[in-house]
Image (cartoon, rainbow, N blue to C red; front, side, top):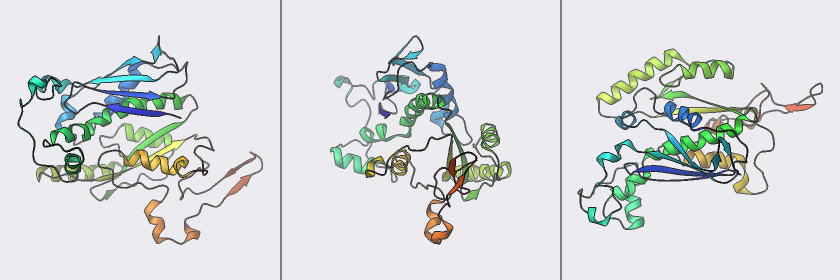
Length: 296
């Protein structure tokens, strides 16, 4: 069972993370982690902070001579913007008051509930930790998990399927082709025509001082059967996946399979019929409406 923790503030000195459960002997280098961090900072319409930071991870513990030890793995990512916030975010009490308190909580963020819960009078004490900057460390820790999964040939591909109400229609293509298209796209969208319209929507929103929302899909291949368990609520795989995704800032909904569309469908249109291949001696399904395993 893998488990991770993160720490650090958006404009603090650094972000740190610990992941435990990775077995010993796994080959791993910082450059493999950094390639995923570089991918995080690309993309059309990214904010100013993405241009300031050039994230690289440093492995601080749990790895020796390029191999994991089986103990928790520690990572740090230094914030380049720290140089501009050294006094304002300093843990030294002598620096207190070096910046006026932030008193306007932002809607759609953790600001208001955070200052109430922890009795703060400065919203910055909340927004610094609730910031999406925290996801940089999640990407680094996720890269470690991906390296582990690659040993079992498990592959994860994500792509944008909607932005600003504009839906992509990549067609029924292979995962390899989908991944290739996504890696060449500024929006990580496999539909070029839809991507062009999405960019216009982003530009228009930016011009008006606004933003647009979107939807992305995650596909995982070569997943072994039996992950998770029906024996307890907190062991169910769907629940654990939804929990992980919903913990990311700005995520407001998770669909498994056809998701919310199932609410307007008959049961016969939702269930995935079970088939058995005698030659291969295995069960399979022709559809994947429930978000389970599908033969491809």
